[in-house]
Length: 553
View 1 (cartoon, rainbow, N blue to C red):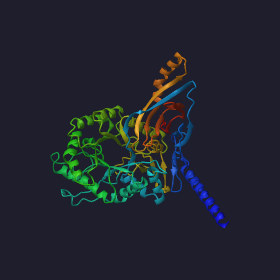
View 2: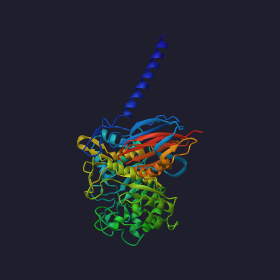
View 3: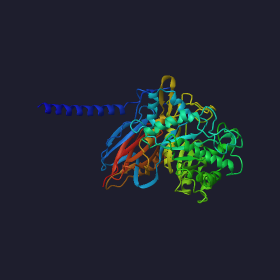
View 4: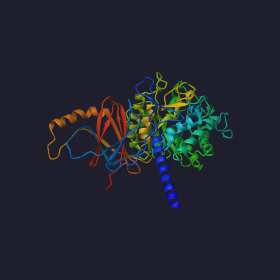
C-alpha cells in the first residue's frame, strides 16, 4: 500500500513538473514586445537582462492548416495565427491569389546574418553580462532568437573601428614574422563570435572581408583612402598580401574559429574614389580574378585551415554586379578560383541585374554581403521605430531571393544611439540599438523584417515558384462573367505594386511564403497549392510569413 502511494505520488509529481515546465516554456516563448514609441511611424521593442520578446514557436501543423506570423506598422511583432483550409467548392471572388508550384525550383538558400565589427563588440561590452547574452540570443539562438546562421568579420580595421590598424604595421615585413592579431580581435570580436557559435550549436558559417592591406603595402602609404597594392601585379606585395590573409585565418583557427569563405576586397571600386573617407583598396574585376587564380587560391590551398575556403569577388554595389560577372566569367579557366560574387545594396538598381549575372555562370553563387540604413550624407543616425526603414529591408531581401541570391547579410549587429562608434563619423542605423546607460537595447522594425526570413527559412531551403493573380472568379460549370474578367485585368497592375511575395520549400518539406504589403490598404490574400487554399488577411504596411506542410500522397 505504501509502495502504491509512493508510485502514485511520484507519477503525479512528474506530471506536475512536466506541465509546469511546458507552461513556463510557453510563457517564456510568448513574451510580448515591450513597446516604446519615439514619435516616428512605428515603435521599438525594449529588451533588458530580465525581459525580451521572442518568436512564438511554430508548433505542430496539421495537413490542412496554415500558420502565419504577422508584423505591421501599428500593432504586431511576429504575432502567430493559425487558420484552416478553405472550402474549395464555393464561388470565390478574391482580391489576390498567390499560387505555389513546388515543382518549379530555383536556388538553394545559404542563410542570413550580420557583421561582427569592432563597434558591435564595443557596444556589447558596455552591457552587463546578462543583457549582452540576451542580445546575442536574439540573433543566434535556436530557441529564443531568429536563427541567424552567417557572420561577417572584417579583417583588421574598417570604418566601424575606433582607429586604423592592421596586423603587420612594420614596413617591408615580407616574412610576416611580426604578424599579430590586434587587441580588438581578442576583446571585441573573438569572444562574441565564440558565443554566437555556441548559440547556433556550431551551425554559424563565417565570412571574412578585408578593407585594406597594411598602409605600407599600398601606393598611398595609408589604409585610409584610395590606392592599390604596390609594385607589379601579382608581384612581391601581392604575394605578401595573400600570405597575410591566410595568416589571419590560421590565427583565428587557434581560437577555435574557422571560416567558410572570404571576399577578396570590400568595395574595391572605393579604392579609386578620390578623397574616400576610410579604409579602401582597389582591385578591378579582372585583377580580382587573376589574383585569386595565380596567388590567393594556391596559397590558401597550401594550408589545411584554408584549403576549402570559398573565394568571393566583387563584394561591391549591386549596380555593378552584371559588368563584374561578364569580366570575371568570360574565361572559365581563369575564373575557376572564384566561387561566387558578393553584392551591397547602397547603389540601388533594378534587381534583374542579379539574374543577368547568374545566367552568365549559373554554377557560381551570388550572396548579398552588406546593407544598412542611414548611409546617405543627410541621414547618418538611427531612427528609433522607423517602419519605412524596415520595409526597405523587406523589399530588398525579398527581391534578392527572387533573383538567385543565396543569402542576405546585414551590416552591424548592433550600434549605439548615435549609430557608432565610427572613427570617421560614418554613423548609420542597425536592427538593434544599444542604450548602455540603461543596460537595455531596442529592437528596431528592421530586426523583425529580417526575422520574417531568417527565423523560418533554414539553410538548404529552396526557392520555389509563386505567382500572383487578382480577382479570381471560380464557379463550377458556369461561364466566367465578362465583368469579372475586366475587373481582374484592371486590378492586376495595381495589386502587383501593393504586394510582393517569395516562396520556399524547407529541408523537412514545409512550404514557406513571405508576403510584403507596403501600402496603407487591407489585403485579403488567398494562398493556393494544389487543391488546398487559405485566406490570409494582411493589415496595412505589414509583412507576413506563412508556413504549411507539403501535401502527403
